[in-house]
Length: 403
Image (cartoon, rainbow, N blue to C red):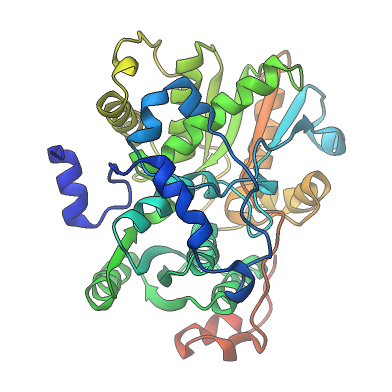
């Protein structure tokens, strides 16, 4: 019987509801999904040849209790930030290259989608409905992976300061075959998202940022993956891990994973959105939700005495608000390119790098790791510019943009 928490998630269409299908059976469906080469926006061979989860090795009961399908090409590399030591003003800083986690589209949503899209498949969903900003990488990832796996996708987009990256994100969504709906402000976006859910064929709602207990287990697993790399001598154990934080799911997953390892590492979330969405209360709630899910599905987890999670939120990089450029983030855009080979964007990667620089100065004796959440794989863009999009988006292609 589903718990009350799961029942509420079902009724709300929340993407984080825990699944009960065997993971092996869900993962086996990978061979039957729509061929990637025939779906708009998909790269041939985007599914990994093989994939084993450190989380399932740590808690074997989970393999038969939660839905999962392989999407990530993992482990992702962990390497020194040698290319930007001059910018950072120091060495001893490493980067976990989740930008390279998939040839289809990288970044921090792929690990979450291994659980989330498997849950959508198990529930018989046909349409993924999600919400995000005009430049949302979560929306781009939902469009690309959803379409590649045979789902229809509808994304309702709220306004944010427009940039070159934002324009490309809109064109990537159009090229994927997703339906893009202009939401406007937050309240109007919520209304239009509800309308989209009501008219969709067998909808499955993905929360903004894809943050909920089930998908955020992807970053508990990611921390266990990093621990294996440390044990193999590929990198030192970090004293501090820096990650951009919007809805806080990646931060929460890494913090819980570090506690499970018994590491004294502090996970630092660089806040990129309003405090009401990105704060310690939200992160603690997300950690608690994951603990409850693990306790239900893996009894041995309840027998562990975990230390308190260690995390902090850095508020210095946000500037005027979500997606708003700052001098420090503009200066960091080319540094992101030096690090991963593609330009950074204002909302997440550039602000995270600007904050990393300050954090490195604040803690000169520590080993610090940046968890890279931008994609270095760039998807195809629809031709024709604004003409490829619904008319409501035309104004976002007018005039020049500063960055």
